[in-house]
Image (cartoon, rainbow, N blue to C red; front, top):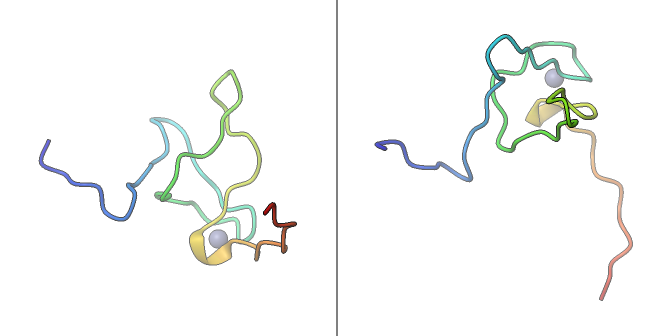
Length: 63
Ligand SMILES: [Zn+2]
């Protein structure tokens, strides 16, 4: 183990898998998080490049 986590780690597509950005349609080489998956291992929901992420809608704050 000579690789340290940099800012939370990097996740890459599994072998034979391709991640496509839901906004620009280009391949995503890596993500700073592990995308959600279905039980069969397929991706659950859309993924985006960091710069393509839609702005988060303001959420109700639970205080
Ligand atoms: Zn994109």
